[in-house]
Image 1: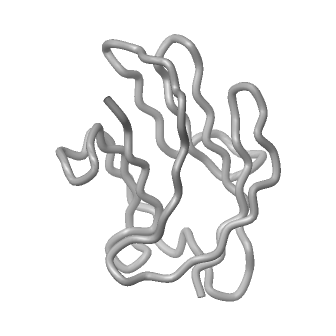
Image 2: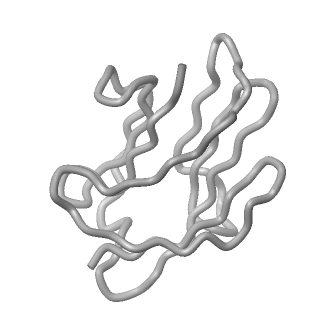
Image 3: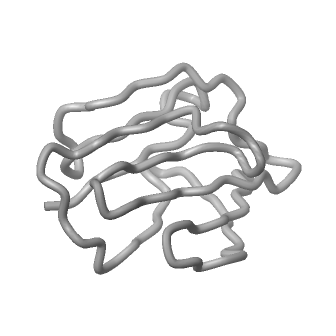
Length: 106
């Protein structure tokens, strides 16, 4: 099992959390202009042993959250752009339960 977090989809208008690569979207949030082509923006991805996944802008409350019914250990994390998009990331901190990333969408 895995989760997919999508930021700035639909022309940088919405973000979501799915339980498979292209499956049903469990969480969908309007996030207009979330990503930028001119500046890095910092985000966090936080996860805990109870199955809760939180995504947000650094130093702010999460704008997306999902709790899995059947928690599972996180063993791997991957990043990519989707559907012909380009992007750049800086990984700032791999903490025990959180990851801080900078995202630039040129």
